[in-house]
Structures are given as C-alpha cells and as structure tokens.
Amino acid sequence: MNKGTILVIISLYIIFILIVQSINDVPLRVDIVEESPTGSIIPGIAEYLQQLISREQIKGLTQTTTFQLINDGTFSNLFSLDPNTGRLIVSGRIDREALCSSWDNNAGTSASVGINSNINDIVATQRNSNLMNGNEFLNSPTNECLQALNILIISRTNQESSHLTTGTGEKHAETPVKTTRILIHVIIHDINDNAPRWHENSLLHVSFVETPSSSNNNGWNTVQTVLRPINENDAIRNAKSIDRAYDPDMGQNGTIVYRLIGPGADYFRLADNFNRKTNHDNNDQYHSQSNTDLLIHRKSDLGLDLYNINNNNINPMTGTHETSLQIWPILPLDRETKDFAGQGGVYNLTLLASDLGNPPKSTSIPLLITLIDVNDHIPQFHNLINQYEVNSHLNSNNNNNLESNYVIYRPLNGNLRETLPIGSFVLQLNASDQDDGLHSKLVYGFCPCDRNLAQNYFKIDSITGRITVGHSLDYDNGPRQFRFKVSPN
Image 1: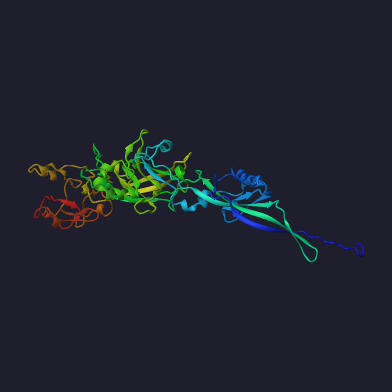
Image 2: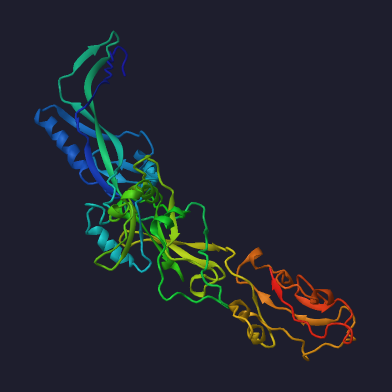
C-alpha cells in the first residue's frame, strides 16, 4: 500500500436473528423395526421435511435450509441426520426392550396348555382367534414402544437485510434465520429376539401330600381299574405356586404358553394365580363359568387341551403383576402305587415355556414334584424261608380272617435243644412298611394281644427283630412248645 492511500475496510458481520417455532401440532409418526441394521434410512422423515420446506419456498421466503437433530437423550444418539437431505439414518443398536423397559413386566401374556399340544398349532390358533367370551386365546397387547425425536429446520430467508455502519466504517448486515422445531414420534416394532426365561432360577420345586391309599394288601398296590379325578374345587384349594417365566417382547412374541413334559406330567394342571383365586371367590358360580378365561378346560378343533389364559399377567382386581403359576394334581397320587408314585415319590418333570412368535422361542426348567408321605400302610411280615406261609392251624378252629394273614416262623430244624445257652439265636423276624421316613421305621415286640409264657423265655431285639433265648429251657419241667405272636409297630 502506498502512503496516503485510504484503506477502507468493510467487514461484514452476519448477525443471526433466531425465530424458533413449532409448526407441527400433530407429531409425525414413523415406524421402525428394532434391531434394524446400521445405515438403514427411516422412511418418511426426509419426505416430510422436504414438504415443509416446499411450503416456505412457495411463499418465496426460503433461501437455504439445513436440518439438525437435537441431542436430547439416549434415543437420539442412535441416529444421524443428513443436514441437507433430512434423511434420518440408524447409527446404533435399537433394542426395544432396553428403550421401553417399563413394558418388561407387562408385555408378556401367558397361557397354559396340555402336555400333548404342538407349539405350531398353538401359534396358528392364536393368530386366527379373537377373544369373545373366554373361549379363545386373548388378543395380544397393544402397548406401543414410542420414542420422541426433535429436528430443527434452520432456514435463512431472502428478505432484504438492514445495514448498520459503525464509526470505524465497518458495515454490519442483519440476516434473519428462522429455526423450526419438528417433533417426530418413532414407533419401535418388536421382533421375537427374546426367549422366555426365569428370574435366577435353575430348578422349580413343589410338594403335595399323597392321597391316602384305601388298600393295605401285601406288596405294592396296583392301579385302580377306573381312576376318579379329584374334585376340581378341592384340588385347586391345595394348589401350589411356581414361578412363571417372563418374556420382554410384545404381543405374540411375548405371549407364553406352558407345557409339562415327562412321566406323570398329565397328572397335573397349570393355571394362573388370579384364576385360582377368582374361582374360590366365585365358588357358587364355578360350574356356570367353567368356559370363561378364568379357567379354561376344553378341546379345541386341533385337539388341544387348553387351560387358563390371563392377559399381560395383570390381576384386574388389584392391578398388580402376577408372578406365579399354580399347579395341582388332577388324579389321586399315592407314592406307594407303582403307576402314581413317580420315582420314589418324586416326579422329575420339565416345564417348557414357549412364546408365540414366528418362529417361536422356548426355554425349559426342571420341575421337581415331591409326594409327602402319610402313614397309610401297615407293616408286612416276610418269611424268607417259607414266604407268606399261612398259619392254617391258627385258623382251623376260628373264623377270624385277620389270623389267616399271619406269617409263620419256625426254627430252621423245627425245634430247639433245651441245652441252648441264654442269648442263643432262635429266629429272625423280617417286616417292611411301604411308607416313607419315620412312617417306615419298625419296632419289633411281643403282640400285646397275646400274653403267654413265651415272653418269659425269649427276647426280641426291638430294632433288628432277632429272637434269642432269654431264660433256660427245661424239657422235663417247663413248657415244651411255644406259640406266640409278634408285631412290628
């Protein structure tokens, strides 16, 4: 620059005048499927934003427009927005169950089905049915997983700007910028990405008291010719609770059906806790309501045994989330009966929980059912040498049928020498009791019903049943024959 040259520096400062307003009173609703791949474009948003811009351009107001995604939470971090086109792009994992965790306790419905049901048939039944009067599966819940996004439309208008000149010769231009906030409601649709599961449980266990046996025959009882089911009202009163599975998915994906699997599974029934309580509260109307959703037991067209449906596991009487299923036996269970004893009074079953997604996801958990013993059997003697020998001599002169069941014990050679020393072995008693625990513990002794001299000459070990000589035997001056009764208690 030459001296004397007057340099006029004109600096142009653009001062934004922000006008923030919202032009969509009704938020735009768009749909997205959870677990959408990164890079997926959310349909409908760019088109909607361009529509809004077109309105401004018609008015001749808009010069340039850009878009900005407002970062206001976790959900907005999962997306990126193209500032020029308005395309909303997935940039993170969209997990409906994590974003809408408030639905986790309510999303799943539950149902109980017979053990011979096929899960594919159940899915078909569910999809083609509507709840009318409790005779079909309940419809899926309609709770939505909704998240909000806010987008700014930044518009620079072509209106004539006003200019200000400072004392230094600098010129300032004011360019109005209008910022519009757009509210977007994103509906996240569920996929069946979760299998049912149990909270911190690796085993379920319940116990039932066995039905006392009406038979005390020797040996194991045999199965009755005609089985009479337990009265359902009585059985339900004795139902036990087991933890239900939960599935955080929605609709059919979170609807759970249960099946019992294993030997003896068809001796038990499953139901919801609320159903059991309601049946008790409405006992007088139980039979007239047997086809309601409170307790369903019917054969469907597919041949399924359908039991109990309770939508969302919510008790409508209390509004609380039900956390347990109910289970009870539908046939008399006798742990001493071969067909209805399980294995040593234990049923090792499997509880299978399957959702109604397509394809369904399943989880199973061991279910241990223990039969609690009652003292319903009398001890039985066994003669290991002459098994179940009947004492016909005792019966020859009386009609007492009880004595016909006595087991005879005799010394090995048929008699005793009078020179046997005290403590010498005479006989070994053997008895057993089909009951369990303390009910099967036996104490041997002389029968209180039989008082004779034998008690003066012999001793019975109360624990082992071993009979020994307790007093010197004398063939010439003492008894020559002893006949006495013993009993296990």
